[in-house]
Image (tube, rainbow, N blue to C red):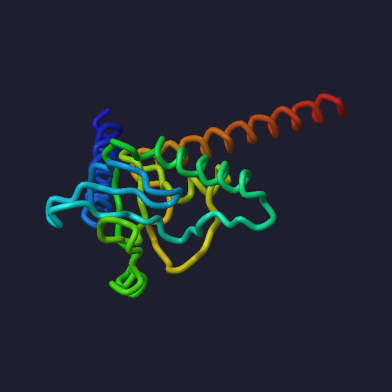
Length: 186
């Protein structure tokens, strides 16, 4: 019985260590308002104001062949989807490498606050850029590599659990097919 408990404790300690390792790279912040479909403000006590987080590795919505009305609707839908994920919520972010940060000359004068290109997650670990890309609100625009550009924490654990159940379901189906084939040959 003691053997069964020890591995579970080791898994828990290992999980805590993994979470601690991830968290030491991230900043926890309170998101306040959504600016556009890929930018939102966070309260920043260190900056004595607000910091604007612009999601990394995603492109703004392109007008393309859309009418102005369709384009505006698509931008508003993207903005609403981002607001649903972050507005007035705790969230996590990790700034992109310095070479991908906008310079003072590149910053948008219409925006009030310092812009930081970053990976961002909901407090439970859902990777916001990936979620918005999967929902069709944003397009991928790889600028830099990030080992964290995925779901993390409990969101990653949920995904792993779903994958394990899916594999189990497939194995059970294969087993049933094999049994049916075996019965047919008897």
